[in-house]
Length: 266
Ligand SMILES: NC(=O)c1ccc[n+]([C@@H]2O[C@H](COP(=O)([O-])OP(=O)(O)OC[C@H]3O[C@@H](n4cnc5c(N)ncnc54)[C@H](OP(=O)(O)O)[C@@H]3O)[C@@H](O)[C@H]2O)c1
Image (cartoon, rainbow, N blue to C red; front, top):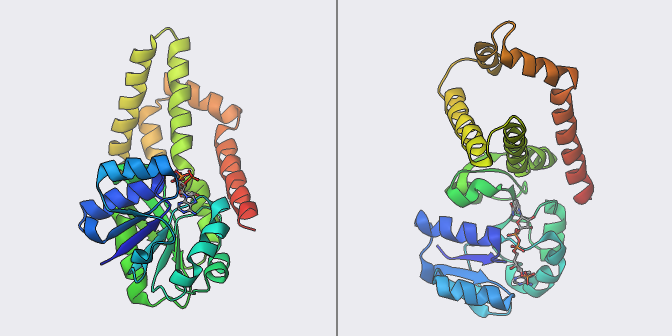
């Protein structure tokens, strides 16, 4: 297998490491297209593949191309690569908010997978939603799925519009989690704990609660009820959350993220 990653910044590099880790590609057959000179030097030092630029003919005939440049750089990259990519068997875009129809028309190629990964991909614990152009052969969809799953889990969406919902939930999700953690730590400090102690109480509670949730048959409502005894401390906090509509506001926030994803992909 020969794979080319176009744009080897944060996400491109995460994919490069994951592909090598799971032997999807050897470093001899991995091509890292990068225009930033400092970044090129960093990649050369890492010695994880061939560092090239868009005008290098060595990237021709790759089995898969991964487009990992910023959405605003895509038009320029597409201009540089169109002749090489026109006949590619599979192009995976991880660019936020760039629709399949736009990628198809700028590259002149209908073999497109559009994916939305998230930042825990760095640890192989990512969550990626993906969709594919209707003409892409199933064999290529499966290849793309195997590739995406090297960074965590991958879920296929038949309907491209749902990628905007996926962006709002799992794409942006890590930031919501860090936001809750941060506010719980800040609350701990206000309640008299030093920062380090507050941080460890919150982080270990999140970790333990995640594993408890994942290893039980109980529903989330049952898990909440099991902690919140009548008239107790947890109930006091939950009552305050309900009075200030925290749940509704979280849902509204995610709806707004979905709407923004829609706007950006117009
Ligand atoms: N970061 C996330 O959590 C996340 C999550 C989901 C999806 N994404 C998507 O992943 C993509 C990459 O994000 P990122 O955070 O990895 O961005 P990034 O760190 O800026 O990486 C993009 C790299 O591509 C390079 N580049 C730009 N134009 C190029 C060209 N013509 N030829 C070769 N290389 C070129 C950039 O160089 P310069 O710096 O010189 O421009 C940069 O090094 C984005 O489209 C984003 O929407 C990111």
